[in-house]
Length: 124
Length: 432
Image 1 (cartoon, each protein chain N blue to C red):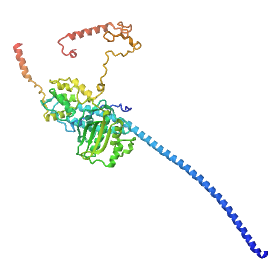
Image 2 (tube, rainbow over the protein chains, first blue to last red):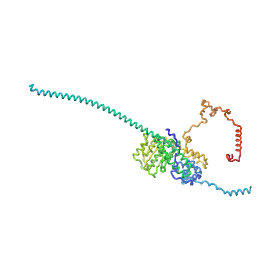
Image 3 (cartoon, rainbow over the protein chains, first blue to last red):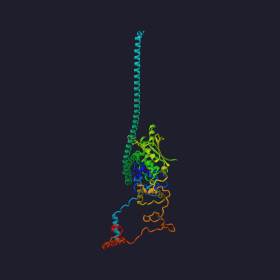
Image 4 (cartoon, each protein chain N blue to C red):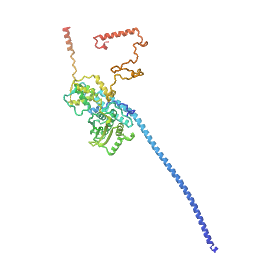
């Protein structure tokens, strides 16, 4: 069955991303940022007839909190597509999400200098 | 009396003579005419014969001409097909290449919904372009590209869905635990895409098109139902003829614009051994097209790409897993290019355990008989020295170093060990 032309390989992905989203609009990046952590809500039942992607997310997220970026990486999907699927699950109440901890606030330089001075006066 | 009778007799004699003369003359003419007649008949026969001969010659000439005409047509068709095939081959390659580029871009800029949406639109247009190129290639006797991995029937249906314009009207129902063997993945997807394209093009814009996947005793059926107007008997006959092709289909017979959906489906189905039929009516009133994939083209092997291999492990472990970034980069990479390692994983049923020391003779031992490889009491082969190993450098091996060079090397070594022991350094390279 192998003819001269057949060994030419097709290397592109098989299922297109717009089929996975069903051609729907993509959610905003702010809604579920790359570092937002998601996990399965306790005691939630998987939706009937899940698509392979939803099944994979279900398995990935059942282990604990995982960031959106990690989920997308494991699925091998663009972040926007994974975000849409996660948003669906969230809206159906299957998913809990937690904002990433806010970045540490910078302390005022003046206070630090005063503390340093105080320490130097006392011990130095 | 004689005299008295004389004139009468004479008259009679004259009459008799005249009569005899006339009879003789008539006979002579008769003979001549007969001869003429016979000659003419002969001539006519000869001419008739000649005519028949000419008829035969004429017929053979006609036959030869039509045969030659057919041959010339066939040659021209084949030449056209060969040229088209070669041209389309590059188009197919380019479409595939572009698809890979778009996929990479989608992963790279996937965080921005605007960019991702545009990339998806490009992807969609490119997929349709690729399908068209594949269709023309098949009609010209060319081949589709070959996939390296099996794909689940559900994914084949979704892949087909992605190759048509109105993919958002298509719904895929039902999942079976079967995969399509790697060599049939593309053909089935292309045929299904052509059927979906027909279904969406010949039904009202808002109506849904359904793919139902059903396992049947002889394989798996992919049933495409649309809510269009259906086909007339004439169209059905034409479709049936194209779907079970008796001979090569001429490219020029497909009309302008060419309608090659059924022709492509028929050729691929015949080549790979699955069945396509469009003769039934869908419950929505439109056409029901059925692709029957026989057991020979199915496997129970799970597709490698869709569900990550480490996923069950993640499900089992209670604590969130900290994954090394390079690990999932590698995964993404392996998904982007599903190649040899998947092939290596593929079905090899219970491979014989690899021997610890494969008895492959090295080139320098090839001359030795294999029996000479002795084994230990435990059955392990004894290691034998293959070639003489000499610790003595050959005379011309090492280039002679000057004293300065030796000194600088030793100095560098010393500096290195000192900086290595220096505990105050935190960042090595910056410190030097």
